[in-house]
Image 1: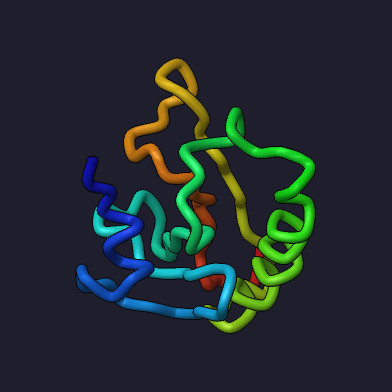
Image 2: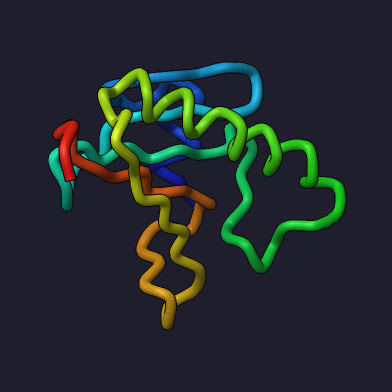
Length: 109
């Protein structure tokens, strides 16, 4: 089964990449729902939060530590929203765990 996010993580599909390291990748959402809409994914395929385990503790902690750095680098100093959709009832469309990092670069509330 093909996974577009695995293809992006492995360099087989194009994406506007904002951040990458050995564990994660952050890139522009192709269908943004906010002025700034970035997807943050683990490089390793995990379908969604239902498939995480204790073994993923370091990976998930790494993601949450990197998100504020990614947000700040994209001008989201005033704040951001983070969303994870899980399963069909949760609105998940692509079955590779991903976090939606969204916001606006405005500096005043």
